[in-house]
Amino acid sequence: MKQRTIAAPVHISGVGLHSGKEVLLELFPSDSNTGIVFERSDLSDTPQIKADALLVQDTMMSSNLVQDGVRIGTVEHLLSAIAGLGIDNLLIRVSAAEIPIMDGSAAPFIELIRQAGIKWQAADKQFLQVLRAVRVTDADKWAELLPYDGYQLNFEIDFDHPAFDKRYQRASLEFSSEDFVANLSAARTFGFLHDIEKMRQHNLALGGSMENAIVIDDHKIMNMEGLRYADEFVRHKILDAVGDLSLCGYSLLAQFNAYKSGHALNNRLIRKLLSDKNNFEIVTFNDSKKAPVAYLEA
Ligand SMILES: [Zn+2]
Image (cartoon, rainbow, N blue to C red; front, side):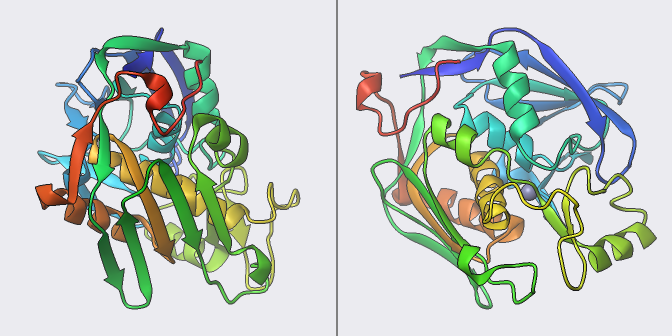
């Protein structure tokens, strides 16, 4: 199984969640073994920032990368789409300090990448196979990676709120591109009205609206259209995790289990995984049929 990039440049624009301003996002094919790299086109020296778990500096509401003082925020939904389609190498040029929020899911990014087309490259695709259990906790929240022949994600949330149906707070994904695209990519982010109002007072979430999030007040979901899936909240948490975990720099072979985890704990988990070389090995597959995960051809 070989590495993948996109077949042609593509672009899209959308509003920045925090700035509320229009952001241009451009994707370009890139060479084997260069990984996922962001570039800030709005700054005079167009600095680059690698998609790397060790560069995640703050996890307030989203995953944000900072390198040499240059920041790129809200990367997780785009990274989730990239990992979901098994893209290894990509240059992401963005005209602001944040990726546009689009509809709050990964679906618009999936569409954009598939519009560009996917190209196989010469170098072998590298997988990170987890060899030992790694676990992090924060009060009652936890997240862990276990050895697994494939990539499986199991997530549980626990909101005691009338908008959250107790029956729909657990979800699982046996990862393949096809399942990711069909069952997970359209799950939107969500937020509570009182948190959004508080952020606005600090000049954050200026672009946030029911166009790009499920908004919940004290009693109910405020969006007229309701949910896209009965368990959309927890599906979105898995979508976030696919993006956050992809910052290890490889396609994962592991079982991921989490209870009430979020961007901060997901990042701590990857840092702990990478901190000890005995936790994992990097593997390739000469015969793509023998690889335990499958990616869409285009
Ligand atoms: Zn999210």
